[in-house]
Length: 530
Image (cartoon, rainbow, N blue to C red):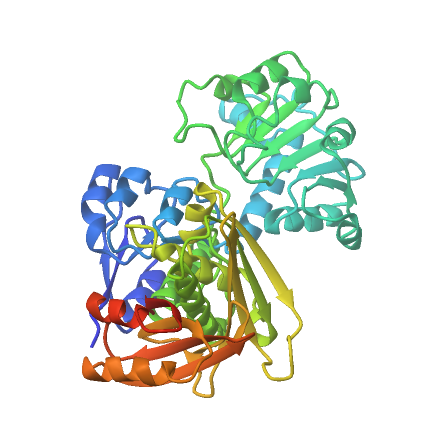
Protein backbone atom coordinates (compact mmCIF):
# COMPACT_ATOMS: atom_id res chain seq x y z
CA UNK A 1 0.00 0.00 0.00
CA UNK A 2 1.41 3.38 -1.01
CA UNK A 3 2.10 6.06 1.59
CA UNK A 4 -0.62 8.70 2.02
CA UNK A 5 -0.25 12.02 0.22
CA UNK A 6 0.23 15.02 2.52
CA UNK A 7 -1.49 18.35 1.83
CA UNK A 8 -0.74 21.63 3.60
CA UNK A 9 -3.41 24.35 3.72
CA UNK A 10 -1.54 27.57 4.57
CA UNK A 11 -4.38 30.10 4.22
CA UNK A 12 -7.90 30.21 5.60
CA UNK A 13 -10.25 27.82 3.81
CA UNK A 14 -13.91 27.09 4.43
CA UNK A 15 -14.85 24.06 6.51
CA UNK A 16 -16.52 22.50 3.47
CA UNK A 17 -13.30 22.75 1.45
CA UNK A 18 -11.25 21.29 4.27
CA UNK A 19 -13.71 18.44 4.61
CA UNK A 20 -13.29 17.45 0.96
CA UNK A 21 -9.53 17.23 1.46
CA UNK A 22 -9.76 15.38 4.77
CA UNK A 23 -12.33 12.86 3.56
CA UNK A 24 -10.34 11.85 0.46
CA UNK A 25 -8.82 8.38 0.68
CA UNK A 26 -5.04 8.38 0.94
CA UNK A 27 -4.69 12.09 1.80
CA UNK A 28 -3.56 13.59 5.12
CA UNK A 29 -4.25 17.30 5.70
CA UNK A 30 -2.47 19.85 7.89
CA UNK A 31 -4.29 23.16 8.35
CA UNK A 32 -1.83 25.94 9.25
CA UNK A 33 -3.17 29.31 8.03
CA UNK A 34 -1.00 32.39 8.34
CA UNK A 35 2.47 30.92 7.76
CA UNK A 36 5.18 33.44 6.91
CA UNK A 37 7.45 32.88 3.91
CA UNK A 38 10.18 31.51 6.18
CA UNK A 39 7.76 29.26 8.05
CA UNK A 40 6.29 27.97 4.79
CA UNK A 41 9.77 27.25 3.41
CA UNK A 42 10.67 25.36 6.57
CA UNK A 43 7.49 23.28 6.51
CA UNK A 44 6.90 22.55 2.81
CA UNK A 45 9.45 19.77 2.30
CA UNK A 46 7.22 16.92 3.48
CA UNK A 47 4.09 17.85 1.49
CA UNK A 48 2.78 16.60 -1.85
CA UNK A 49 0.13 19.33 -2.17
CA UNK A 50 -0.26 22.96 -1.08
CA UNK A 51 -3.56 24.86 -0.94
CA UNK A 52 -3.42 28.66 -0.64
CA UNK A 53 -5.39 31.84 -1.10
CA UNK A 54 -3.77 35.26 -1.55
CA UNK A 55 -1.96 35.39 1.80
CA UNK A 56 0.75 32.77 1.30
CA UNK A 57 3.79 33.77 -0.74
CA UNK A 58 5.04 30.74 -2.67
CA UNK A 59 8.36 32.21 -3.71
CA UNK A 60 11.45 30.64 -5.26
CA UNK A 61 12.80 30.31 -1.72
CA UNK A 62 9.77 28.24 -0.71
CA UNK A 63 9.78 26.13 -3.88
CA UNK A 64 13.48 25.33 -3.46
CA UNK A 65 12.55 23.49 -0.24
CA UNK A 66 9.56 21.70 -1.81
CA UNK A 67 11.19 18.32 -2.37
CA UNK A 68 7.95 16.34 -2.70
CA UNK A 69 5.51 18.99 -3.89
CA UNK A 70 3.44 18.01 -6.93
CA UNK A 71 0.62 20.57 -6.95
CA UNK A 72 -0.17 24.07 -5.72
CA UNK A 73 -3.87 24.91 -5.59
CA UNK A 74 -4.87 28.59 -5.46
CA UNK A 75 -8.44 29.16 -4.27
CA UNK A 76 -9.13 32.13 -6.54
CA UNK A 77 -8.04 33.49 -9.90
CA UNK A 78 -4.77 35.32 -9.44
CA UNK A 79 -1.51 33.44 -8.97
CA UNK A 80 0.61 36.56 -8.46
CA UNK A 81 1.74 35.14 -5.11
CA UNK A 82 3.17 32.01 -6.76
CA UNK A 83 6.45 31.96 -8.69
CA UNK A 84 4.90 29.97 -11.54
CA UNK A 85 8.03 29.69 -13.76
CA UNK A 86 10.11 28.33 -10.86
CA UNK A 87 7.34 25.92 -9.87
CA UNK A 88 7.03 24.78 -13.48
CA UNK A 89 10.74 24.14 -13.87
CA UNK A 90 10.50 21.95 -10.79
CA UNK A 91 7.58 20.03 -12.29
CA UNK A 92 4.90 21.38 -9.96
CA UNK A 93 1.39 21.85 -11.35
CA UNK A 94 -0.14 25.21 -10.40
CA UNK A 95 -3.95 25.32 -10.41
CA UNK A 96 -6.47 28.07 -9.78
CA UNK A 97 -10.27 28.45 -9.83
CA UNK A 98 -10.87 30.88 -12.69
CA UNK A 99 -14.67 30.83 -12.59
CA UNK A 100 -15.38 30.36 -8.89
CA UNK A 101 -15.49 34.07 -8.06
CA UNK A 102 -16.22 35.46 -11.53
CA UNK A 103 -19.80 36.57 -10.78
CA UNK A 104 -18.81 38.07 -7.44
CA UNK A 105 -15.93 40.07 -8.92
CA UNK A 106 -18.01 41.26 -11.86
CA UNK A 107 -20.75 42.43 -9.52
CA UNK A 108 -18.20 44.27 -7.39
CA UNK A 109 -16.78 46.08 -10.42
CA UNK A 110 -20.24 47.26 -11.45
CA UNK A 111 -20.99 48.26 -7.85
CA UNK A 112 -17.82 50.35 -7.82
CA UNK A 113 -18.81 51.96 -11.11
CA UNK A 114 -22.27 52.89 -9.92
CA UNK A 115 -20.99 54.09 -6.54
CA UNK A 116 -18.40 56.22 -8.32
CA UNK A 117 -20.89 57.61 -10.82
CA UNK A 118 -23.34 58.59 -8.06
CA UNK A 119 -20.69 59.51 -5.43
CA UNK A 120 -22.37 57.28 -2.87
CA UNK A 121 -19.38 56.76 -0.51
CA UNK A 122 -18.64 60.50 -0.44
CA UNK A 123 -22.25 61.35 0.27
CA UNK A 124 -22.38 58.75 3.03
CA UNK A 125 -19.27 60.20 4.67
CA UNK A 126 -20.76 63.70 4.42
CA UNK A 127 -23.97 62.68 6.15
CA UNK A 128 -22.06 60.90 8.90
CA UNK A 129 -20.31 64.20 9.42
CA UNK A 130 -23.68 65.83 10.12
CA UNK A 131 -24.05 67.54 6.74
CA UNK A 132 -26.79 67.60 4.09
CA UNK A 133 -24.92 68.52 0.90
CA UNK A 134 -27.44 67.56 -1.74
CA UNK A 135 -26.06 69.70 -4.55
CA UNK A 136 -22.43 68.81 -3.91
CA UNK A 137 -22.86 65.18 -4.90
CA UNK A 138 -24.54 65.47 -8.27
CA UNK A 139 -23.68 62.30 -10.20
CA UNK A 140 -23.82 60.78 -13.68
CA UNK A 141 -26.39 58.48 -15.28
CA UNK A 142 -24.87 55.37 -16.80
CA UNK A 143 -27.71 54.37 -19.16
CA UNK A 144 -26.96 55.25 -22.76
CA UNK A 145 -23.26 55.77 -22.07
CA UNK A 146 -20.32 53.74 -23.41
CA UNK A 147 -18.52 51.26 -21.20
CA UNK A 148 -15.05 50.12 -22.27
CA UNK A 149 -13.98 46.71 -20.98
CA UNK A 150 -10.28 45.83 -20.96
CA UNK A 151 -10.12 42.01 -21.03
CA UNK A 152 -12.99 39.74 -22.05
CA UNK A 153 -12.28 36.68 -19.94
CA UNK A 154 -14.82 35.10 -17.60
CA UNK A 155 -15.23 38.24 -15.49
CA UNK A 156 -15.13 40.70 -18.36
CA UNK A 157 -17.89 38.83 -20.18
CA UNK A 158 -20.12 38.83 -17.12
CA UNK A 159 -19.54 42.57 -16.66
CA UNK A 160 -20.42 43.17 -20.31
CA UNK A 161 -23.58 41.08 -20.05
CA UNK A 162 -24.81 42.86 -16.91
CA UNK A 163 -23.84 46.26 -18.33
CA UNK A 164 -25.97 45.66 -21.42
CA UNK A 165 -28.89 45.01 -19.10
CA UNK A 166 -28.26 48.45 -17.61
CA UNK A 167 -28.51 49.91 -21.15
CA UNK A 168 -24.82 50.64 -21.53
CA UNK A 169 -23.17 50.33 -24.93
CA UNK A 170 -20.22 47.99 -24.46
CA UNK A 171 -16.97 48.13 -26.40
CA UNK A 172 -13.99 45.97 -25.52
CA UNK A 173 -10.34 45.25 -26.10
CA UNK A 174 -9.03 41.70 -25.86
CA UNK A 175 -5.99 40.43 -27.81
CA UNK A 176 -7.32 36.88 -28.24
CA UNK A 177 -11.02 37.50 -28.85
CA UNK A 178 -12.07 37.66 -32.49
CA UNK A 179 -14.55 40.18 -33.84
CA UNK A 180 -17.10 37.50 -34.80
CA UNK A 181 -17.27 36.12 -31.26
CA UNK A 182 -17.45 39.62 -29.80
CA UNK A 183 -20.32 40.46 -32.13
CA UNK A 184 -22.21 37.35 -30.98
CA UNK A 185 -21.97 38.77 -27.46
CA UNK A 186 -23.32 42.11 -28.60
CA UNK A 187 -19.95 43.77 -28.10
CA UNK A 188 -17.87 45.89 -30.46
CA UNK A 189 -14.21 44.86 -30.45
CA UNK A 190 -11.86 47.87 -30.69
CA UNK A 191 -8.22 48.83 -30.24
CA UNK A 192 -6.92 50.15 -26.92
CA UNK A 193 -6.67 53.66 -28.33
CA UNK A 194 -10.26 53.58 -29.62
CA UNK A 195 -11.49 52.30 -26.28
CA UNK A 196 -9.69 55.07 -24.41
CA UNK A 197 -11.04 57.85 -26.60
CA UNK A 198 -14.64 56.60 -26.88
CA UNK A 199 -15.45 55.29 -23.39
CA UNK A 200 -17.37 57.23 -20.76
CA UNK A 201 -16.46 54.54 -18.25
CA UNK A 202 -13.61 52.00 -18.34
CA UNK A 203 -13.36 48.82 -16.29
CA UNK A 204 -10.28 46.58 -16.22
CA UNK A 205 -10.50 42.77 -16.20
CA UNK A 206 -7.10 41.69 -17.51
CA UNK A 207 -4.20 39.86 -15.85
CA UNK A 208 -1.03 41.68 -14.85
CA UNK A 209 1.48 40.86 -17.58
CA UNK A 210 4.43 42.72 -19.11
CA UNK A 211 1.96 43.96 -21.75
CA UNK A 212 -0.60 45.28 -19.25
CA UNK A 213 1.74 46.63 -16.57
CA UNK A 214 1.33 50.42 -16.37
CA UNK A 215 -1.17 50.26 -19.23
CA UNK A 216 -2.97 53.22 -17.65
CA UNK A 217 -0.23 55.81 -17.57
CA UNK A 218 0.10 59.52 -18.29
CA UNK A 219 0.06 59.01 -22.06
CA UNK A 220 -3.12 56.96 -21.99
CA UNK A 221 -4.88 59.11 -19.40
CA UNK A 222 -4.41 61.98 -21.89
CA UNK A 223 -6.38 59.99 -24.50
CA UNK A 224 -9.40 59.43 -22.22
CA UNK A 225 -12.52 61.61 -22.16
CA UNK A 226 -12.23 64.50 -19.74
CA UNK A 227 -15.15 63.30 -17.60
CA UNK A 228 -14.33 59.58 -17.80
CA UNK A 229 -14.42 57.25 -14.82
CA UNK A 230 -11.98 54.36 -14.31
CA UNK A 231 -12.57 51.14 -12.36
CA UNK A 232 -9.83 48.62 -11.52
CA UNK A 233 -10.95 45.44 -9.77
CA UNK A 234 -8.37 43.26 -11.56
CA UNK A 235 -4.73 43.61 -10.53
CA UNK A 236 -2.57 46.31 -9.01
CA UNK A 237 0.13 47.50 -11.37
CA UNK A 238 -2.08 47.78 -14.44
CA UNK A 239 -2.83 51.36 -13.36
CA UNK A 240 0.22 53.49 -12.63
CA UNK A 241 -0.80 54.96 -9.28
CA UNK A 242 1.45 58.03 -9.47
CA UNK A 243 0.19 58.91 -12.96
CA UNK A 244 -3.39 58.33 -11.83
CA UNK A 245 -2.95 60.76 -8.96
CA UNK A 246 -1.74 63.46 -11.36
CA UNK A 247 -4.54 62.77 -13.86
CA UNK A 248 -7.18 63.09 -11.14
CA UNK A 249 -5.71 66.24 -9.61
CA UNK A 250 -5.42 67.90 -13.02
CA UNK A 251 -8.94 66.87 -14.03
CA UNK A 252 -7.86 64.76 -17.00
CA UNK A 253 -10.36 62.15 -15.78
CA UNK A 254 -13.22 62.66 -13.35
CA UNK A 255 -12.76 59.80 -10.91
CA UNK A 256 -11.43 56.33 -10.16
CA UNK A 257 -12.58 53.33 -8.16
CA UNK A 258 -9.88 50.89 -7.01
CA UNK A 259 -10.15 47.47 -5.41
CA UNK A 260 -6.49 46.59 -5.98
CA UNK A 261 -3.16 48.32 -5.41
CA UNK A 262 0.52 47.91 -6.28
CA UNK A 263 1.29 47.00 -2.67
CA UNK A 264 -1.30 45.33 -0.48
CA UNK A 265 -2.25 46.18 2.19
CA UNK A 266 -1.68 49.67 0.87
CA UNK A 267 -0.10 52.43 2.94
CA UNK A 268 -2.73 54.26 5.06
CA UNK A 269 -1.06 57.49 3.89
CA UNK A 270 -1.35 56.56 0.21
CA UNK A 271 -1.98 59.80 -1.74
CA UNK A 272 -4.93 58.34 -3.66
CA UNK A 273 -6.81 57.72 -0.42
CA UNK A 274 -6.83 61.45 0.23
CA UNK A 275 -8.56 62.39 -3.05
CA UNK A 276 -12.31 63.00 -2.97
CA UNK A 277 -12.81 61.69 -6.49
CA UNK A 278 -11.38 58.27 -5.55
CA UNK A 279 -13.30 55.45 -3.92
CA UNK A 280 -11.60 52.26 -2.86
CA UNK A 281 -12.07 48.88 -1.24
CA UNK A 282 -9.48 46.45 0.26
CA UNK A 283 -9.40 43.83 -2.53
CA UNK A 284 -13.00 42.73 -2.00
CA UNK A 285 -13.68 41.47 -5.53
CA UNK A 286 -14.05 37.85 -4.45
CA UNK A 287 -15.21 38.56 -0.90
CA UNK A 288 -18.70 37.16 -0.71
CA UNK A 289 -19.74 34.17 1.33
CA UNK A 290 -20.89 32.39 -1.82
CA UNK A 291 -17.62 32.91 -3.68
CA UNK A 292 -15.44 31.93 -0.72
CA UNK A 293 -17.34 28.68 -0.35
CA UNK A 294 -17.32 28.00 -4.09
CA UNK A 295 -13.57 28.48 -4.66
CA UNK A 296 -12.74 26.45 -1.54
CA UNK A 297 -14.82 23.53 -2.78
CA UNK A 298 -13.44 23.77 -6.31
CA UNK A 299 -9.76 23.90 -5.38
CA UNK A 300 -10.13 21.10 -2.85
CA UNK A 301 -11.77 18.87 -5.47
CA UNK A 302 -9.09 19.74 -8.05
CA UNK A 303 -6.18 18.99 -5.71
CA UNK A 304 -7.73 15.69 -4.61
CA UNK A 305 -8.38 14.68 -8.23
CA UNK A 306 -4.80 15.40 -9.25
CA UNK A 307 -3.17 13.63 -6.31
CA UNK A 308 -5.41 10.55 -6.55
CA UNK A 309 -5.97 10.09 -10.28
CA UNK A 310 -3.72 12.54 -12.12
CA UNK A 311 -6.65 14.56 -13.47
CA UNK A 312 -5.57 18.11 -14.32
CA UNK A 313 -8.12 20.92 -14.22
CA UNK A 314 -7.64 24.69 -14.37
CA UNK A 315 -3.84 24.44 -14.37
CA UNK A 316 -2.03 27.61 -15.40
CA UNK A 317 1.19 25.84 -16.44
CA UNK A 318 0.05 22.57 -18.05
CA UNK A 319 -2.87 21.67 -20.34
CA UNK A 320 -6.01 20.69 -18.45
CA UNK A 321 -7.61 17.31 -19.04
CA UNK A 322 -11.40 17.16 -18.57
CA UNK A 323 -13.34 14.50 -16.71
CA UNK A 324 -11.94 11.00 -17.16
CA UNK A 325 -9.48 12.19 -19.81
CA UNK A 326 -6.48 11.62 -17.52
CA UNK A 327 -7.23 7.90 -17.41
CA UNK A 328 -7.93 7.67 -21.15
CA UNK A 329 -4.84 9.52 -22.25
CA UNK A 330 -2.47 7.95 -19.70
CA UNK A 331 -1.41 5.05 -22.00
CA UNK A 332 -0.50 7.51 -24.77
CA UNK A 333 1.50 9.64 -22.33
CA UNK A 334 3.38 6.51 -21.27
CA UNK A 335 3.96 5.60 -24.92
CA UNK A 336 5.22 9.11 -25.75
CA UNK A 337 7.57 9.19 -22.78
CA UNK A 338 9.06 5.81 -23.75
CA UNK A 339 9.53 6.93 -27.34
CA UNK A 340 11.32 10.01 -26.07
CA UNK A 341 13.49 7.92 -23.74
CA UNK A 342 14.36 5.58 -26.60
CA UNK A 343 15.41 8.44 -28.88
CA UNK A 344 17.39 10.02 -26.07
CA UNK A 345 19.55 6.88 -25.90
CA UNK A 346 20.11 6.32 -29.64
CA UNK A 347 22.95 8.80 -29.95
CA UNK A 348 23.27 12.57 -30.07
CA UNK A 349 22.05 14.56 -33.05
CA UNK A 350 22.71 17.94 -31.39
CA UNK A 351 18.96 18.26 -31.13
CA UNK A 352 17.38 21.54 -32.20
CA UNK A 353 13.84 20.37 -32.88
CA UNK A 354 11.53 17.78 -31.40
CA UNK A 355 8.41 17.10 -33.48
CA UNK A 356 5.48 15.11 -32.11
CA UNK A 357 2.73 13.88 -34.42
CA UNK A 358 -0.44 12.30 -33.05
CA UNK A 359 -3.06 10.40 -35.02
CA UNK A 360 -6.42 8.97 -33.97
CA UNK A 361 -7.22 8.73 -30.25
CA UNK A 362 -3.70 9.80 -29.30
CA UNK A 363 -4.60 13.40 -30.18
CA UNK A 364 -8.14 13.43 -28.80
CA UNK A 365 -7.26 15.87 -26.02
CA UNK A 366 -4.71 17.80 -28.05
CA UNK A 367 -1.10 17.10 -28.87
CA UNK A 368 0.35 19.23 -26.06
CA UNK A 369 0.09 16.68 -23.21
CA UNK A 370 1.57 13.95 -25.41
CA UNK A 371 4.32 16.29 -26.62
CA UNK A 372 5.28 17.26 -23.08
CA UNK A 373 5.50 13.59 -22.07
CA UNK A 374 7.75 12.78 -25.06
CA UNK A 375 9.91 15.81 -24.32
CA UNK A 376 10.27 14.77 -20.68
CA UNK A 377 11.30 11.27 -21.72
CA UNK A 378 13.88 12.60 -24.15
CA UNK A 379 15.42 15.11 -21.74
CA UNK A 380 15.53 12.65 -18.85
CA UNK A 381 18.82 11.18 -20.06
CA UNK A 382 20.55 14.55 -20.23
CA UNK A 383 19.48 16.19 -16.94
CA UNK A 384 20.68 15.46 -13.43
CA UNK A 385 17.48 16.76 -11.84
CA UNK A 386 14.12 15.01 -12.32
CA UNK A 387 12.08 16.20 -15.31
CA UNK A 388 8.37 15.73 -15.96
CA UNK A 389 5.68 16.97 -18.35
CA UNK A 390 5.40 20.27 -16.47
CA UNK A 391 9.10 21.14 -16.27
CA UNK A 392 10.12 19.72 -19.68
CA UNK A 393 8.94 22.67 -21.86
CA UNK A 394 10.92 25.11 -19.70
CA UNK A 395 14.03 22.94 -19.86
CA UNK A 396 13.66 22.68 -23.65
CA UNK A 397 13.27 26.43 -24.06
CA UNK A 398 16.39 27.09 -22.00
CA UNK A 399 18.30 24.73 -24.30
CA UNK A 400 17.01 26.22 -27.54
CA UNK A 401 14.96 23.15 -28.49
CA UNK A 402 11.94 23.94 -30.64
CA UNK A 403 8.90 21.74 -29.98
CA UNK A 404 6.52 21.21 -32.91
CA UNK A 405 3.07 19.69 -32.31
CA UNK A 406 1.14 18.09 -35.18
CA UNK A 407 -2.19 16.31 -35.30
CA UNK A 408 -2.60 14.24 -38.48
CA UNK A 409 -4.80 11.61 -40.06
CA UNK A 410 -4.05 7.94 -39.35
CA UNK A 411 -1.07 6.92 -41.54
CA UNK A 412 -2.51 3.56 -42.59
CA UNK A 413 -5.29 1.07 -42.01
CA UNK A 414 -2.97 -0.97 -39.83
CA UNK A 415 -2.77 1.54 -36.98
CA UNK A 416 -5.71 3.76 -36.09
CA UNK A 417 -3.81 5.69 -33.41
CA UNK A 418 -0.09 6.46 -33.31
CA UNK A 419 2.46 8.75 -31.72
CA UNK A 420 5.51 9.65 -33.79
CA UNK A 421 8.47 11.48 -32.24
CA UNK A 422 11.28 12.94 -34.35
CA UNK A 423 14.39 14.59 -32.96
CA UNK A 424 16.57 16.49 -35.41
CA UNK A 425 19.66 18.66 -35.39
CA UNK A 426 22.92 19.29 -37.17
CA UNK A 427 23.92 15.66 -36.60
CA UNK A 428 20.88 14.23 -38.39
CA UNK A 429 17.62 12.88 -37.05
CA UNK A 430 15.97 9.91 -35.38
CA UNK A 431 12.29 8.97 -35.66
CA UNK A 432 10.30 6.54 -33.52
CA UNK A 433 6.65 5.65 -34.03
CA UNK A 434 4.54 3.81 -31.51
CA UNK A 435 1.01 2.61 -30.84
CA UNK A 436 -0.84 0.73 -28.13
CA UNK A 437 -0.89 -3.05 -28.22
CA UNK A 438 -3.87 -5.28 -27.60
CA UNK A 439 -3.22 -5.19 -23.84
CA UNK A 440 -2.79 -1.41 -23.85
CA UNK A 441 1.01 -1.45 -23.55
CA UNK A 442 3.47 0.64 -25.55
CA UNK A 443 4.58 -0.92 -28.85
CA UNK A 444 7.27 0.39 -31.21
CA UNK A 445 6.11 0.05 -34.82
CA UNK A 446 8.73 2.15 -36.57
CA UNK A 447 12.31 3.26 -35.92
CA UNK A 448 14.40 5.28 -38.37
CA UNK A 449 12.61 3.84 -41.40
CA UNK A 450 12.38 0.23 -40.18
CA UNK A 451 8.98 -1.37 -39.55
CA UNK A 452 8.83 -3.24 -36.25
CA UNK A 453 6.44 -4.66 -33.68
CA UNK A 454 8.52 -4.41 -30.51
CA UNK A 455 7.49 -4.09 -26.88
CA UNK A 456 8.75 -0.90 -25.22
CA UNK A 457 9.48 -2.17 -21.73
CA UNK A 458 12.44 -2.75 -19.43
CA UNK A 459 15.89 -3.50 -20.80
CA UNK A 460 16.14 -3.53 -24.58
CA UNK A 461 19.08 -4.34 -26.84
CA UNK A 462 18.92 -2.26 -30.04
CA UNK A 463 21.04 -3.80 -32.79
CA UNK A 464 21.74 -2.82 -36.39
CA UNK A 465 23.33 -5.43 -38.64
CA UNK A 466 23.67 -6.69 -42.20
CA UNK A 467 20.78 -8.95 -43.18
CA UNK A 468 22.87 -12.13 -43.30
CA UNK A 469 22.26 -15.71 -42.08
CA UNK A 470 23.54 -16.62 -38.64
CA UNK A 471 23.52 -13.18 -36.98
CA UNK A 472 20.43 -13.85 -34.83
CA UNK A 473 21.78 -17.27 -33.82
CA UNK A 474 25.18 -15.85 -32.87
CA UNK A 475 23.62 -13.14 -30.71
CA UNK A 476 21.30 -15.64 -29.05
CA UNK A 477 24.21 -17.98 -28.31
CA UNK A 478 26.21 -15.26 -26.56
CA UNK A 479 23.27 -14.10 -24.50
CA UNK A 480 22.44 -17.67 -23.55
CA UNK A 481 25.99 -18.39 -22.39
CA UNK A 482 25.83 -15.28 -20.20
CA UNK A 483 22.51 -16.44 -18.65
CA UNK A 484 20.69 -13.41 -20.12
CA UNK A 485 17.11 -14.37 -20.89
CA UNK A 486 15.46 -13.04 -24.06
CA UNK A 487 11.71 -12.54 -23.61
CA UNK A 488 10.99 -11.14 -27.07
CA UNK A 489 12.82 -10.23 -30.28
CA UNK A 490 11.64 -8.27 -33.31
CA UNK A 491 13.44 -7.55 -36.58
CA UNK A 492 12.79 -4.88 -39.18
CA UNK A 493 14.34 -5.05 -42.66
CA UNK A 494 15.23 -2.31 -45.12
CA UNK A 495 17.52 -2.47 -48.18
CA UNK A 496 19.70 -5.32 -46.92
CA UNK A 497 19.93 -3.94 -43.41
CA UNK A 498 18.28 -5.32 -40.27
CA UNK A 499 17.23 -3.46 -37.16
CA UNK A 500 16.48 -5.72 -34.18
CA UNK A 501 15.11 -5.04 -30.70
CA UNK A 502 15.84 -7.71 -28.12
CA UNK A 503 13.84 -7.51 -24.88
CA UNK A 504 16.05 -8.96 -22.15
CA UNK A 505 15.42 -9.55 -18.45
CA UNK A 506 18.46 -7.72 -17.10
CA UNK A 507 21.00 -5.06 -17.99
CA UNK A 508 23.76 -6.42 -20.24
CA UNK A 509 27.33 -6.14 -18.89
CA UNK A 510 29.83 -4.10 -20.88
CA UNK A 511 32.02 -7.15 -21.62
CA UNK A 512 29.04 -8.89 -23.22
CA UNK A 513 28.28 -5.81 -25.30
CA UNK A 514 31.87 -5.79 -26.59
CA UNK A 515 31.54 -9.44 -27.57
CA UNK A 516 28.30 -8.74 -29.43
CA UNK A 517 29.79 -5.75 -31.26
CA UNK A 518 32.67 -7.93 -32.43
CA UNK A 519 30.35 -10.34 -34.26
CA UNK A 520 30.56 -10.43 -38.08
CA UNK A 521 27.99 -8.30 -39.92
CA UNK A 522 27.03 -6.38 -36.72
CA UNK A 523 27.19 -2.61 -37.21
CA UNK A 524 26.03 -1.36 -33.81
CA UNK A 525 24.78 -2.65 -30.48
CA UNK A 526 23.14 -0.27 -28.03
CA UNK A 527 21.63 -1.07 -24.62
CA UNK A 528 18.48 0.92 -23.84
CA UNK A 529 16.64 1.17 -20.52
CA UNK A 530 12.91 1.94 -20.71
